[in-house]
Length: 159
Image 1 (cartoon, rainbow, N blue to C red):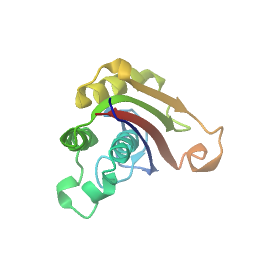
Image 2 (image 1 turned 180 degrees about the vertical axis):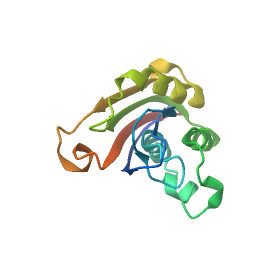
Image 3 (image 1 turned 90 degrees about the vertical axis):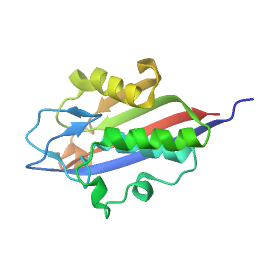
Image 4 (image 1 turned 120 degrees about the vertical axis):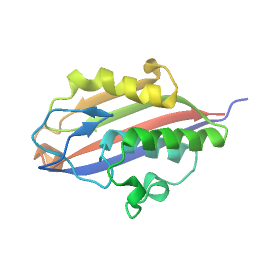
């Protein structure tokens, strides 16, 4: 019998001038980018935390602390690949990922197919196993006021 496990991930980063906006491994044209120690890819950080949580392997900050210069400016696709190695070392495989990015601007629909492809290729799974949605908060809260971007992700893994 296969053991199925579910994990949830959440991340948020502030929008600031002078940074590229990287979401799902895609450089999205925008006048501001996300602030963070790595490339601040809010979507991939949520996905990493969902996978780590499902495998009971703590969280992204534990494995890739912002106090470690080795991770300064690193592509979060590399972090996702390392997370995949960690869960595989525990005997798990990815069943599927479902994620939501919360951003008032920019509109992300034109970039979702590439985000799905990046995540699937990095995890060694089919694109159909990755779903990404984007939504606004109708002008409410920090995302609605364009101060930051947030993401939620759920992951199913199995042995």
